[in-house]
Image (cartoon, rainbow, N blue to C red; front, side, top):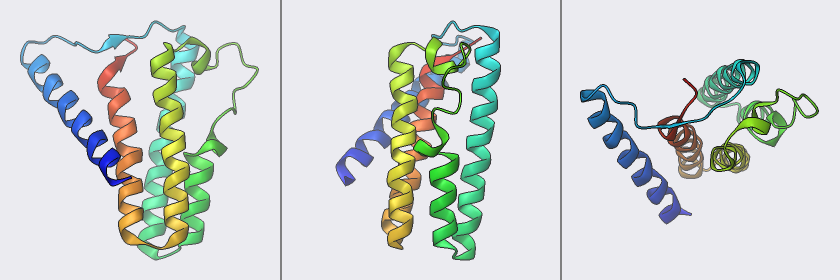
Length: 147
């Protein structure tokens, strides 16, 4: 687990370094993910909800409420947060490039692992789980754009 986390961190840092160079040239080198406007709006709302979930989990961890933090991680970020738009023709996952969709699923999977780590109460596992979730978010944001 540790080596894969370090690998994920390295990937994110390399992507960030590439973006820093792109910013100097005003060139956005991320892959354009062409999606319908309705799908983009749903995806952005979903990502804002994920951001709030990370803040909620962090707050609950700071209060020492590990059970509530694990439940919030599952519901707001993990597989509990997936599939809520199933059946909606504008569901973002239907319109994402396959690698982007896999990155999203990887974030949900990392969140499930994070909630398990939170339930364990092991601080190292909790921090590693947090890092995996945030790295999954950053990796996708650094690789793809919708405008």
